Length: 300
Length: 300
Image 1 (tube, each protein chain N blue to C red):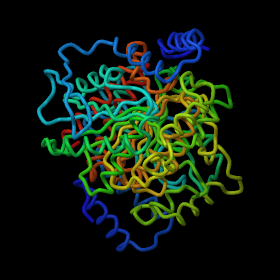
Image 2 (image 1 turned 30 degrees about the vertical axis):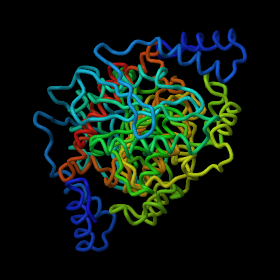
Image 3 (image 1 turned 45 degrees about the vertical axis):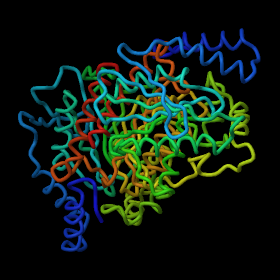
Image 4 (image 1 turned 180 degrees about the vertical axis):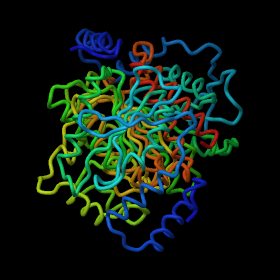
């Protein structure tokens, strides 16, 4: 197949070759492989990370010379709630912090299946409260995340609404996983065009996250009424089975009167900004998100 | 109600007062009032319009000093297929042409009920063929329109696909009317929050446009498979009963692998860029569209 994007053909070949060579791996192996692969991506020049805790949750702060005082990104990494870490996503969070001219907090929330729902959401809420206690102004705070981290970010904002806590100035979602049920139209329509995620894997990971809990609006925010949430930017690839999570949530948010920017990137796979070293479109998405966050911090 | 936008409260008061003072008007009166109100908006400095025909269709060409050679916007005005004209929309098309750095062609397609479907679509197709015959490069051409003009622009691209004609480089839609059936979720959900359009009026206008024809994918493109259409930008207000037309079509286009930017503007009513003299958000939308069109012309 011929692609318009200059990078996606090679990236798809890389994914297929890697899957063929690797075979079955345990979750522990998957965590370690993902972390070491991703940790090899260098941070932008001048970026550094400092370990800290937010409430009782391990986290890190990404600092760099271009971070304007008081402008903050809280980022929740992806990995299906079962893998991903500060190591794997530090480079992405650092890129986003630089693009936004902000400092970033990156959260090491507890993972399933060892810690099923609501552990991750409890951690995110603890961390958010801790940021407020540190004096972070919610009007100068954006909450973001990709994949499961996007679902967690959205659930956090729903939880803030329930708890009567102030909303942040924006919600930034990359390929968010917002529906545990694999019922979206994109599962059938995109299907095997998705080079990264299959429906049966989503179902397994959902089971690991839900544990004994029932699926609800905090685990599948696509079923929530998003009224009261802040303006949002959603970036998603057209070649992913999770596409309908984004389009459905965007429609719900629009109907609730929320400012929504949905940008569907043709030919791009799941969470493509994470793979910006292979996909230059990921860098453009990060720049777009940075400009959007800067406008949110400025009240625009 | 308190609004975030600085202009929308006064604009809604203006609309309510005008509706109360005017009472019932005939279609002829509505056409004349709309045309004279809108024709009073001045063109941007240096803009001029030249009458011409495209095929057999009356049209005008908007020229200005910043128009780069060979970059073209074909614009189809709105007005429910029953009103609107070169007079009413010239100022918007001129603003868009300036923002895009392009020349613009503005089409005086035939209106219903005197000329029901497919008269308008036939005219749009004639005009598109005429642009190609003039040497316009489809890779440097964007087709745009608002409301019914957005529906007509989308139908034109579906017709091009059917006819084997080249697609333009982009499709630009403002609050497009893409569904004749008033079945979208926004009719119930937005309902009377919409200060401009009511469901019963949409049904009447749909009847006028359809005449003896049945509703199909060319009259309600929300039911079309948009595969093969070019990248699109959709701008829509959150306070309009037509909102679901935009969100549904965006979802369909995304599933077809098309690059989609959907921007839902909170608090904004139907076709708000047309009212840019009262709503500064309309000017920002025009600037956003101009930048997007410029990137499309450049192959971005």
